[in-house]
Image 1 (spheres, rainbow, N blue to C red):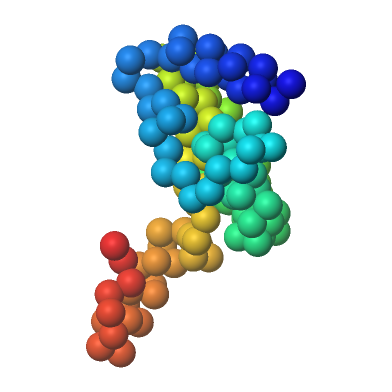
Image 2 (cartoon, rainbow, N blue to C red; image 1 turned 135 degrees about the vertical axis):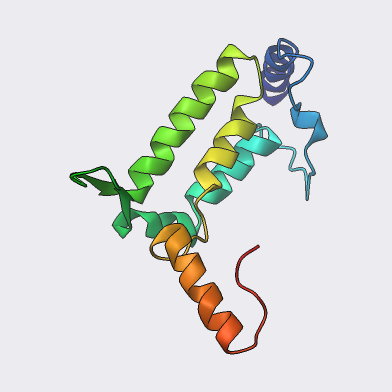
Length: 135
C-alpha cells in the first residue's frame, strides 16, 4: 500500500512545472520506509509542531493603517500568507509543500515588534560592541 501511495505522489509531482523544485531535490536527513510523506511535507510538520510556531498563538500582528484598527494574531497572518502563497504556487504549478513550508516558517524567530524590534536590538548590540543583530 505504501508503494502505491508513493507512486501516486510521484505521478502528481510529474505534473509540476519544469521550474518547480521537486521533492527528490530536497536534502534528506534520513528516509524512513514507512513514512509516505514527501520531504517538504515533513518540513511543514516539523514547523507546525515546533515550539517557535506554537508561540505564534499569543503574538500580535499589527498592520498600521491610518486608524490602526486591524490588529490580529501572528499565527493567523502566517496562515493567510501560506494560503496566498499556495494559491499562487498552484497556478504556476510549483511545489506546494515547499511553498507552504516557507510561508509557515517565514516569521519564526522574529523579535517582538517585528523589524522595529530587530532595529532596537541592533542598536543595543552596536552600543555594547557585540555582533550586529541585523542580517
